[in-house]
Length: 250
Image (cartoon, rainbow, N blue to C red; front, side, top):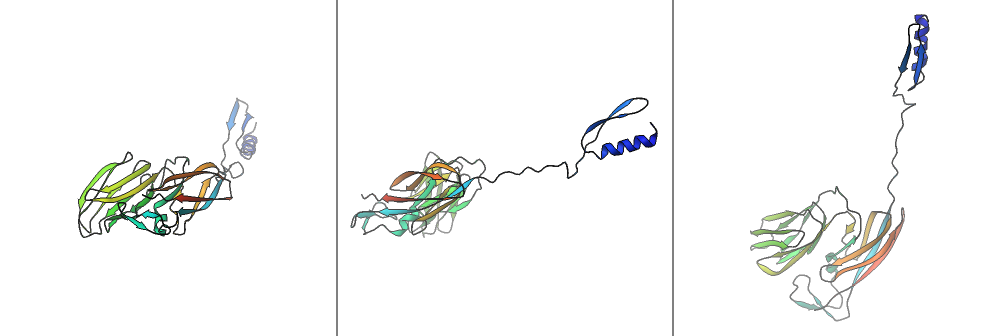
């Protein structure tokens, strides 16, 4: 085969893309493999969007008319109201109880002030790996400690204007107290997933981007405890639910 013929054969091979072909030569038979990265032979893998839905609902705190309701600020005292204080809704967290654990969660920051001999707010909900700060706003010393299974610590005593912090690396309920003021208590709920929220003042709440499936949805209050219901989440749809939490009187 003349040199010009070999050149023409190679040109034809190169134009065919990633194929293996055989070109005959007088001295030998040569195998030629040609790789190409042309747009015609490349492919794009498109991942399907996750199937997620939405949960909307309401939490109501109910109590018999005229029943004494334990004060949220001072658990050792009682006050008489016809209905629970709206601020008690802030002591409720709604969450998907059996949501799958998420390995990589964004670490956030939250604050639980020490003010008027109380933890404000009394309930904080965060993802695993988040940090909670405890600034002292009272004109005297405070302390923060916990003996909870998920986190055992003692931040010591510190005066007004100073703050201590703690990073929570395990999911679960962490109860915090003050060595100097026995009536002070607060709750920190740490989650392995992002599907939780504290309702608005009117009790309404929304959980967006929940993976489709059937779950147990829980509403937890620091004194009432946990109430759970089954809910089905469908992709692209909104599931609705309502909780009525009875307020215990002591």
